Image (cartoon, rainbow, N blue to C red):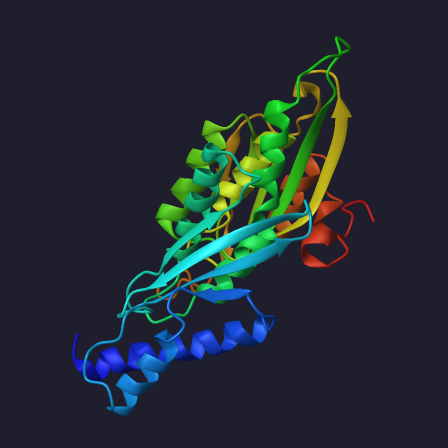
Length: 293
């Protein structure tokens, strides 16, 4: 890497550090390994220091609200970051080794979705604040001994997920693979918009959502959930028999541009068949016209 582009990287790193210090203004929230690191980089950029400065390394302590826990996020910025990957590791005394491993695996795969040149420390912090709770909660479930012999109540869940679009072959394959691997049923409607419905026990649906949520596509949200307490195996609650891809006719330029809108009338018919017509308005904000009116 030329010294000119190296300098561009270091300037971006300083910019990101400024943002972090404004987000975490309190003394000790951002702890630099080397207190002179930023000064040395500034001197290098001004030309008063010739030797390449040491890498920026720091720890940020994040306070997670629910459950009330702390995560220490350790960050190392290689000299060529953001054009090469950031080194990140999250630690918490409240997590066992396995949970910590899973948390970091999730974080690393999320950071892997950023394009070279994109700053991502702030996004990593946001991801931890939004997603770390499930790693702590899972751990509690593992260790609580079951003392009751009463029938176990399970939560059966149905999640309706809306995406701006779902086109990519590898993404579609991943969604189908995850759906078939877990004990869930439902569908993935590809195209624009992309709609996913997943139903099954809560733990399986949440794992599905967790696994598919951070590939390279940004506009995705869970619009609606339906949950039912059950003592059975949930089979009688399912509206779908398997997890399949739903391909409907498309409107628009199907060939040249990957920008085709799905036939929503057909989709509404499909929902009617599966006793889910009420979801149409939730997903699209449009009243469905009843066929007998």
